[in-house]
Length: 362
Image (cartoon, rainbow, N blue to C red; front, side, top):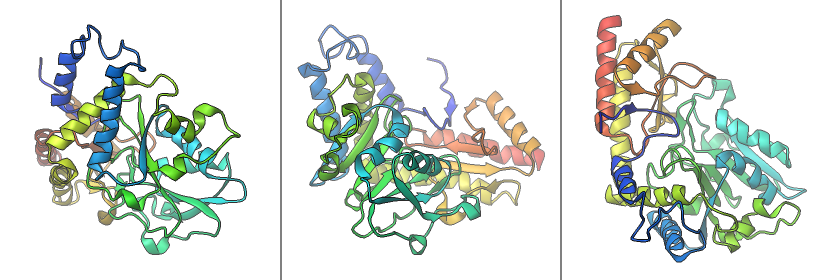
């Protein structure tokens, strides 16, 4: 195998090398069955054991909370933007959305097609460079749930502490920071995440929720869009993305081997600090996009003094083997996505490049 790229893609993103190597070893034949896991029936005992093990590992990393269930669904977080209000926003009630950037806006836009939605808090006036404080949260009466986006990949902001919504269920899109740190799942009615950033390859979406929310009747929508359909069928109502779920199981196993969520958090914060140190210590050559109190430890967003310098940085970094550092096309700038599987050595190499770029261009 040749040298692996310095992969800072925002998603699909880096996977642990150990996971890739294990998958490679089992790819053609899985556990003596004479088949790849991609070839076997999802109704068979071999696949079901992998499926169930992934669910158990996931809840185990959350401390095996009582009353919570896991679903493996398809369609990414974008499908959840619609499924959540379809299932959990009945007529005559409201949903509060906390507006923190691009993905929160997309979630709210979809929900407005289904029911009554209001803005529970917003940082749009600050160009989404921070997340709201608890004091900015305003929950109206008859609110069925409050929705937040835990980490905005485009703007590079992240909730350091999650809001307290009282007795109203809190639902969170954790697509870009799930399992980057310990999580008190009891604070949430539901969390959901596309797998392609911290949990595995694209193709499967993880939902963890209180059982009573998933079991709620929603007879006026197609069966495949009902949470209770998937709950009662152990996420096997239709053919699941079996290989993606197998990879999630392997990635969860890898997280356990890193010391669980506490161990992963220590590594992630150390990686993020390497880059923020270069930004803050550059004498203004680099400027961080997110306000310091809301900085993400998953997506480090920054700019240089001009659009020309941004382009020069991106172009030269590509020549040196760095992948995915261009900011999102909607905002420009630079972005280093340093998800769980991005090795510290890659981040150290980027910090060295940033330091050298300042010397030659500052």
